[in-house]
Length: 332
Image (tube, rainbow, N blue to C red):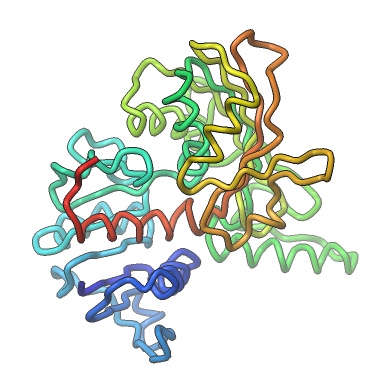
């Protein structure tokens, strides 16, 4: 396949290059695109320096566009790219369009059958959550879900990670910590706001988890309440999840389901202090799940903890997995 990466010099763009290489994706030609100020740079792919081009106003000469340059760019250009390419878009520009599939390959690959050359990648928080929630939903039927997230600086891209690193150095040196990417200084702090507040008091990030869970799981009845918090870690989003199920469930039964779930690593041995953490989930393709226990709030309920690399399963890996599906018939 001829592959084009839009936003190639950003945090997700660089991870797309790494994932394509690690998964030995069949790339016959690679084109890298970014803003005019980044044009002329080169990025390494399979031992070769690939030049970065300024994004043109025309369709791109590739089979698949992996877009990670933000919603405004995708909204403007994706319909143009889709004239001759399949666009896998990492922004929120098309996620809620009824005729655009929103895909987590392990869950709803079948929804790609009727795509119209634009396929949406879900919000990173939702993708990481559903890797654990969906297998349990299939087995025990989830009814209500309460999620608290601990989202890393990488969720705001390369600028967020740089601001955290620089701000930490300034804080430790006793200097004032400036902030531009985040609403407040992030070092040694947590910020209970990600994205803009909506009329109902939730942020848009929190509402995305509800909207996208219902669409991907094809269940408009499932109820999800989320509180999204930015924390001072570089990458990996972690989530505390409480689920009420329709059918009886035990921690032992849940572990059996998750042990067999694709894309999931069961890390659940509290006695030996083994549980999901950013420290261990960073750089992993699989999402870690652990701290599984019976809920004290719901009769048919579980509590568990999830950690997944936001730049991988939450973004670049999921996009490449979608591209892999394009190479074969969708049968599931």
